[in-house]
Image 1 (cartoon, rainbow, N blue to C red):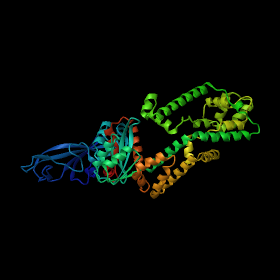
Image 2 (image 1 turned 90 degrees about the vertical axis):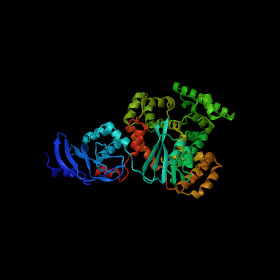
Image 3 (image 1 turned 120 degrees about the vertical axis):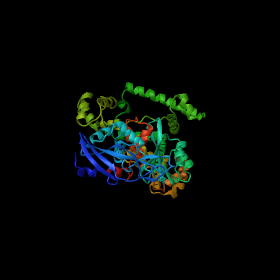
Image 4 (image 1 turned 135 degrees about the vertical axis):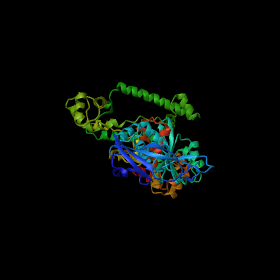
Amino acid sequence: MIALSSVSALLPPSLPLRLEQAEQQERFLILTVVSTQEARACPVCGHSSTHVHSRYQRTLADLPVQGLRLRFRLSVRRFYCRIRECVRQVFCERLDGLARSYARQTQRLTACLELVAEALGGHAGARLAERLSLPASATLLLRRLRQFIGPLSPTPRVVGIDDWAYKRGQKYGTILVDLEQHRVLDLLPDRTTETVTAWLRKHPGIEVISRDRAGAYADAARQGAPQAEQVADRWHLLQNLTEAVQRVVERYYPRLREVVQTSAVSVHQELSEPVQKTTLAPSLAAAEQRRQVRDAERQARCAEVLRLHAQGFPILTIARQLRMHRRLVRQYLRAGVLPRAYPSSRQRQLDPYARYLSQRWQEGCHNAAQLWRELRERGFPGSDTRVRQWMRQYHRPDKKSIAAVRAITLLVPSPRQTTWILLDGPRPADEKTKAWIEAFRQRVPEIDRVTQLAHQFVVLLREKRSHQLADWLAHAAKSPLASFAAGLRRDLAAVQAACSSPWSQGQVEGQVNRLKLLKRQMYGRASFPLLRSRVLAAPSPGSRTQVAAA
């Protein structure tokens, strides 16, 4: 037996309980407890009763103590209800705050298990619970998670809506976030207009809806919450602008290649030992010949797409007839020419070592494997295949000018890189590339006009100059950005709100990132109800965290 005074503090202080006995059995500490309440109210009619019918025992598991699993052996009474009209003649004594009806665990133990299940899920949570001396299996944790009911909250005032991938490329859902309370409101099983509209109609009183540029969510907001102000996300607007500028750059990209070729010719003319183009042209390897054949096939297919579109065939029909994806067909039509295959960044790997390779070649080392081993010692991350390709393409025994090699290996920035440079992206370009881009803008007035409009729109959006949006749209409608401006006009109210409202999709994107983390912790095999329960089970400030710590 254990002294009662030493364990009496383990009883919940807010409940009328009296400790009768305490004993330890192996890893368990068992406390025999009796209720001291004289009268209890009937759960049906509410009248109090002091007439005891009988007694029975309940065993409740509680939080562990010093590595011992705590059990309450509770003596519970049954009472008579003396109201003749009441349908409940005999009712059981309930101890609110200790355990629910028919429960075998205390409420504070249940709250802790819910927190463990929310954070780690089933099997991982069960392993942690075993270390903490909590009696919980993976099945129990998942069952507690499914049974969890969050606290009722008033209708949100500001809501953010976005989609999330349940199975990427195949199945998508919708997440709704309360931007003021920083918590997830609900998960929907799809991203259709009907589903989102039905949810919004069940929650009247929403004043602001932040969303991306998806048309389905715009229609759902107009139908389900017509009184709410729609706010287009500023990051998505800038992303749409970047895509529009890149399409214009792709249209005039051959002109940029001409600028770079002109620069290469000027470099050749400055060499003390000029090199003729015919002496530097390598013999075509088998891989190069196959690439040229593929380019010719792609060129013919692009010409066929343009011909069919000129005859009035829709994009989907062209895609089915030529067995192409509709996105590729749309890309051909937007560019008007065949999109070229741009060199990857791996082709720049040997640029810092070109001088050393040329020097070793002049010294008589023509072994590609030996040169590759020397480059590896100097920090080259590529394979020996890259060294062999460099030797095959840019070195001939008769001409070995380092300057000529550097002029030939000049790489034209891709349309995406060119777009980032035009828009002052986060990655600054070198002086030579900047000179090419500046010459490109001077040679193509459309590019210069698009760049100016893009910078104006960025300033307009970041400095919240909504009063200048109408003038900008009027100027953009007469430029290559006319399609982008037309899209903004179709969503004009939301775009104007984006230029003045403080709300954005930042919180929503963070919640989507957390949702992805939870989904990957369950190896992507969780059912939608379980995933929804785990996302919604996040404790709000001052709710379950305080209960678990009590």
